[in-house]
Image (cartoon, rainbow, N blue to C red; front, side):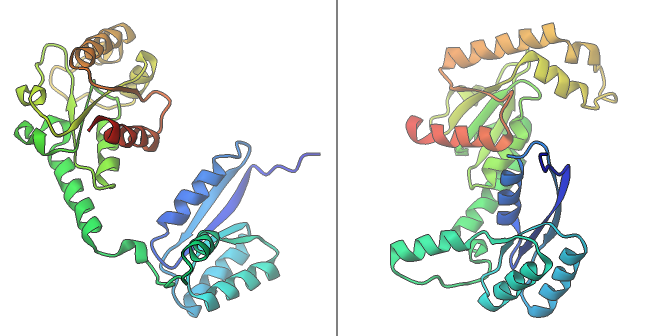
Length: 273
């Protein structure tokens, strides 16, 4: 008989923010359709007292333990305790660090939160995020040439979340909506620096997403027309014509996550710039 659990506890223990663990844990969990992970995230665990408190919670709800703790003494305590409880534990960074050490011929610094240093890259990300938020939904079109990427598409093609994701990678991003009967900013046709990408999706997908959007208080809003698949198909036809006329690359976001869309955009940049 197949041993399959409908859910399991996933304990993510980190001496930093836990972002690395969350990404790794979710990526692994996504490979098992029959099981659902109940996440328990414990960030900033940096001393024995904090770790003991966390391990008591793990013991109360045993499951899989993933951790990123660079302090070897704490990591050893964690591993031994998990063995006593009878559950698996994995130091997510250790195999990667080991490969780096072998290849580089130098030991790791074993410094907590080293990836979050407030260096030039950190401030570039903050600047990109502020820029992107200030230019959401076509605001301040006079700054278009200052962007790294410009996303263009009809409503509900994931322009804003994709823009924010790119900004978190230090990429200044502007998104501009396409609305039939409303001309695009003149500056858009004159820019030289940014990569311009058109985003589309199927009519069914856009209708579904729009149907879940609450715009009932918007003056003159006609929800029936907004979610009508035939009307959406016309919007998409109009958008595709613009993309084709300007030779802009197009990405279909229908079955892509925000991360996958952003990765496709990043991959386009070196080829087109």
